Amino acid sequence: MPSRRIRLPAFAKATLRFIVRNVIVPLWLTLRLIAYVRVGWLIKFCGLVAFAAVLSPAFFRIAWTYYTSRRVKRDILYGSSPRNRLDLYLPEGCHYDASAVDDKSGTSPGTAGGDAEDAGDESGGRPVIVFVTGGMWIIGYKAWGALLSLTLMKQGFIVASLDYRNFPQGTVGDMTQDVSNGIGWVAKRARSFGGDAKKIFVVGQSAGAHLASSAILRQTEYETSLGGSVIDYGTAVARWSPRDLAGFVGISGVYAPDDRALAEHFNRKGLHKEVFWSIMEAGYSGARAEEALPRASPCAMLRDIPGVASSLPAVLLCHGNADGSAPPSESARFAEALRAAGSQDVTERYYDGKTHTDPFVTDPISGGHDVLLEDIVRWVRRKDPRGGEIALPAMPALLPSLLVDVARRVVPF
Image 1 (cartoon, rainbow, N blue to C red):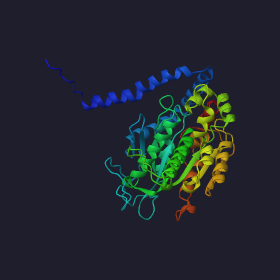
Image 2 (cartoon, helix red, strand yellow):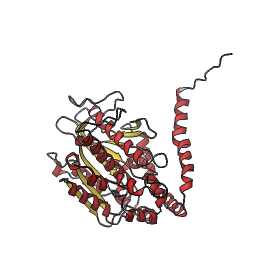
Image 3 (cartoon, rainbow, N blue to C red):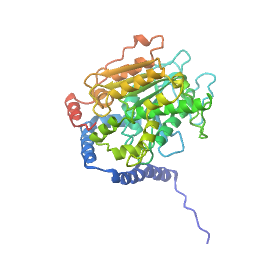
Image 4 (cartoon, one colour):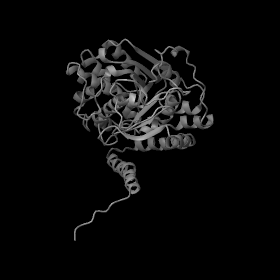
């Protein structure tokens, strides 16, 4: 008898895909990570669990909005590699059409003017922010940026929050390529969902700042090597130029992984050298460190790529002075390298007494005036006619200050 193919209902197929993507694959990657586990990791993990537990009431509120808001379009594919998905945060009046691709002509078809959150220019196009989250290159997830993305959306910005391959599913080259593909996907479709193609900003946090800056610099290198041609990797998503970007914002970033002192710092903090070297494609023992680490270093790229400054967008670097995970000297060093390469528009903002998680997590949860949010909004809008008149309202507290203070004490980062 001929074999009969079993046809699953659409709901069953969707459920199966969800289980594979969110349960089986993470479990498989966790098992692979066991080979790298050290006692220090277990201590850090316990601290992370305690941190999340204390802040869980706020996280549940954020998750509820993330999963129920009709203005958040989740799990949109931007490439063909694993974890090539993004979330779109669309202000009122903006719409996502999966079939639409921006041809960089005409008006913005995805927007309808007149809503209260209008942050666009005279043509109605809104600034677009591509957000790349951190996570030590190991635990990054696009939803980590939900609080910042939701807040920016309320200010009238379109936000695309990217996922990318984490280690050990990918190494730094894979992650950088994923981020580049994500930027290209957004640049190609910005107008179709109501964005201004001339106001695309890339914002990276922690490891995400490293990957985003690396993607911009690598794209500049490839473009320069081809005599100014826009790069197309054949995937139909990475075709973009750094000249298309209006700016880059680095939050608590790492920009010099070729610095031995930084590797030693990470080793003391629990990201052991064998893991760090493996992520940066230097080999488990670091045997290829001299060759591989400069390739993964934005500071080294600025030094080694001829004429790179002419293609780079404006840069804002934000960092807490009390950051014990990613030293604030990383932002200072990157700013110095940018200026040495010829970049003229580089702004630095350092926050007294702020740790690695304060500007991005605990400060917004505490409510009041969010200095990081205000710096980003004012900087992105600085060339708008009303940019200097921006006065953001105080944000509501998501948790009592006592719980936030406890979370600050137990956080491992």
